[in-house]
Image 1: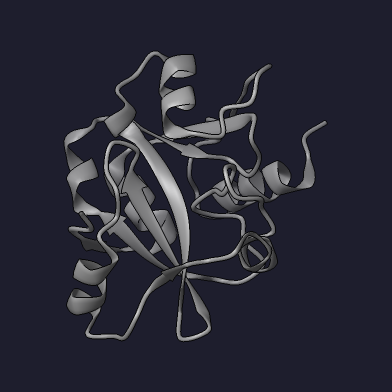
Image 2: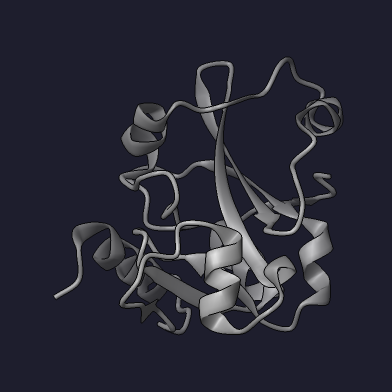
Amino acid sequence: MYPEPVVNVKNALAAAGAEDTVTVFDAKVPTASAAAEALGCDVAAITNSLVFELGGAPLLILASGAAKVDVRKVAAQLGTGKIRPAAPDFVLEHTGQEVGGVAPVGHPEKIRTLLDSSLVVHPVLWAGAGDHNSMFSISYRELQRITGAEEMPVR
């Protein structure tokens, strides 16, 4: 039996016609480096699902685990005001998932999503699957398709 957030991710993958590649680990993998170590992959192939607040609404940025998001650069590209990291309860409210386990899909409502264009070089990406013990693999183009994300350099 999977926790509800993981079930939501599995359902979202199925609804999008994507392969269910969810992997559940015995130990928690709440950081990109922990996930990369557990998976034996480059930390740059880990896709962090980072929730920011933009004008009271959530903004999901799917970014490489090897880089920090430059919020000023993103705001300038979007032509918007200040983007700030979201508080943990804001993240939970809008995604149904806790910080450290947020997935790119499986949220109660569609969230505007940006996809870090630097991830395109990796044939396989790994993203959180709704909790601290789960990840799923996907290609860059498939991730972009199922999330409807806007491609953008974010670092």
